[in-house]
Image (cartoon, rainbow, N blue to C red; front, side, top):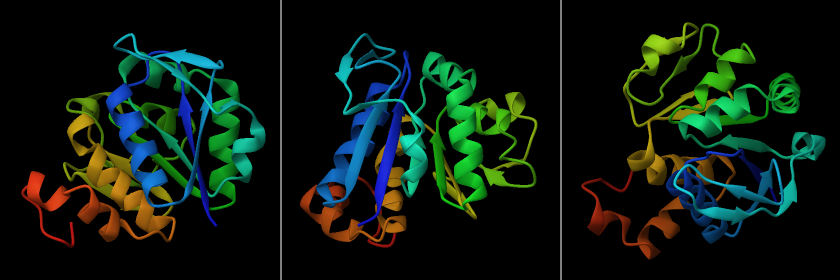
Length: 186
């Protein structure tokens, strides 16, 4: 079974993070939260107890996911271990996923050069590498990006598919098609 690691840095965006973890776990896939500490404070003062402490163990996973949140993204970007993890996973062509403000960490790791990506509104002015698109989710090789809190569902379902899970079954159980104006192939 493929497995995903979600990195939680102080100031992470709680809605994005927990939506991603919840949906991947609902697909019966392994999704572990790796925190800068055992308990990490989010950007809206919600504390989350992580499954594991951030370590190079993440490199053994099939996918790493960086949620947004301005402070959380800056903390991810400024972390030497996160940079090492991103670069080693990229060398192994593993999925590197980021949303909202977190693509700034991908830029620091030089992973957006000549890549299509998306991010939170205005980040096309902050990120100098790559080609910014306004799609909900952008996949370019092993790099997967998304826009912000409202796109967390679409992002998480796409991650389930990339992990060889059944996102359609999860979407139906979660009443996704009744709550959002989307078609079954979105």
